[in-house]
Image (cartoon, rainbow, N blue to C red):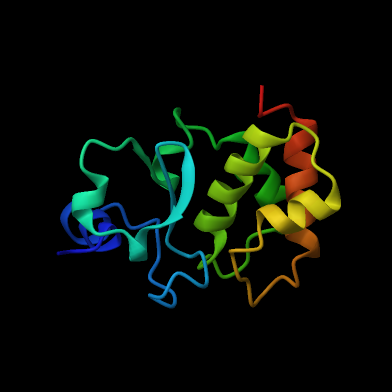
Length: 137
């Protein structure tokens, strides 16, 4: 009955997904499961059986940052780091849906992720910059 978040962090030592609220409200534990953005704190490990899981550790496939990560860095979209992995995965998910999202689509796409540091404008700018890089293609 372990949660997926606990298995990722404790058993697999993939510590990018963070325990924020533990109730699926903050997005700090967001991962991609079969291509869908989910809160890993709400997923019993049995539901993840045979699922394709992508954590923040799996976003960059080389030694270099993924373009989304680079855009967050360059635009000040990451500060304390608690929400950053979830924000980046939410951005990844959003840009798969919309290649050039409007500000409203960005706001809706990131609405399940809370940040207490940036005030969101820098995060929105990072998402817009990432869209311009063509990462969705």
